[in-house]
Image (cartoon, helix red, strand yellow):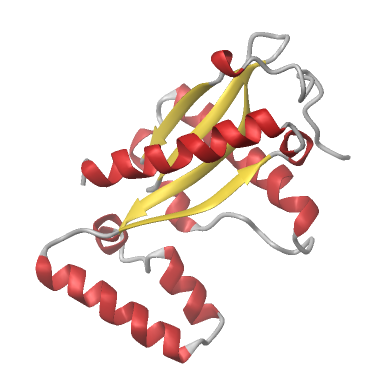
Length: 172
């Protein structure tokens, strides 16, 4: 079975109708049906967005997805449901520390056994812990493959994403 969205023509999207949904800290909000709905949609976005470009055994999520926040770019489909076209996640060092979880970038370099990177990143993380200044990490950016060819949409998402990241940093 191949999962695909079929309700929206990638080239007929009115950018003024795109809404951004931010799902924050799913673990704390999973009793809310909307949180469950958007978490599931985020996972589908990752599967469909990363799937064509990565090996079949690549899982584009980890435990930090439960306590990260996810910015999701949505458009209403013909059934009146929000369809997630693009998105990314952000997580702070303080949340990772709270859940006793490596910040995802550190987890990645540890998995690759990249010792110089592990040491350098560990120093940066320690500096942030010692200074009391939080650290924010953004990752897992994807746009559904069918929608990447819409240059207007891609440009919109690429221009709004840094603004969302900056706003999140101001709110640390």
